[in-house]
Amino acid sequence: MPANTPRARRLRLAAALALATVAACVTAITMNDEPAERRTPAAPITPPDDGPGLLSFATPSTPPAPAKNEQERPSQPPSSPETPASPARPRHTPATSPTPSASSPKPVEHGTSVRSVNYPDRYWHLSDGRVKLDPATSAPARHAATFTRVKGLADARCWSFATADGGYLRHRDFLLRNEPDDGSRLFAQDATFCPRPSAHTGAVTLESLNYPGRFLRHQNFQLRLDPYQNTDLYRADSAFRLVDGLA
Image (tube, rainbow, N blue to C red; front, side):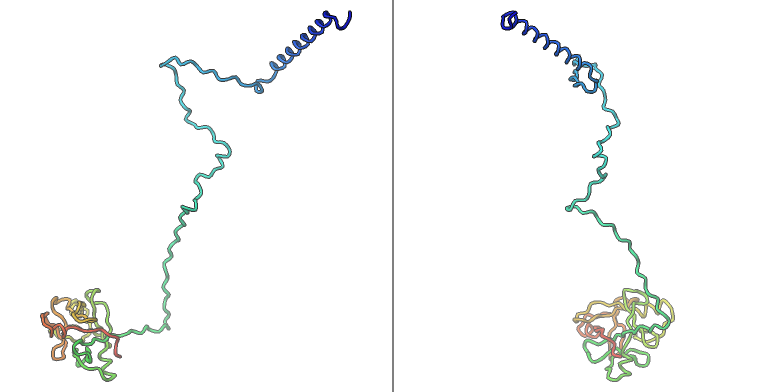
């Protein structure tokens, strides 16, 4: 039979169709034989909404394990430059005072001298156990006019004046004297004087601790304890300037 006859052409077309059908069947069989994990998952089927009464599945209480990169994150974010981390507070170590050796020299005490405001060339001066207002023109006089000002024996907010022989200035019979400390409460109070403001610049007045309202003042160049008087003379007589020791 000739190759180009209509019948021959139809036979060739039918053969081609048969080959295509066979190839399609082979392909389908091959896909059905693939493992389940390699198949393309089908789209999830959404259940119909039948209204109230459907069971709801709660979210599991245990959260899913984080991804590996999330597990490696630090529990606290690092401090940013804008908010630097607070440095650890250094432990306080108390200072240790050195223990003086037996050969250490005794510290030098700087004395105090008390000068009158209205008689600036006269100072408190020990004479026969009493305190007078005298010039201090000689070395013995300067030594007798130098005291050590310490915290008050009866009140640390006030002052006491120690003398070179170990005594203190105290008032007795309202006169200022130098006497040894007998350890009594009365002596401590008599030897304690509290500084008060003065009307004169750089000066103070000294009020008795146990006789409030009475101040030390000089009268006839004798230091005594007198009640306050609202006069210019009293304010001048009771004003004193504390200066460096003359001795």
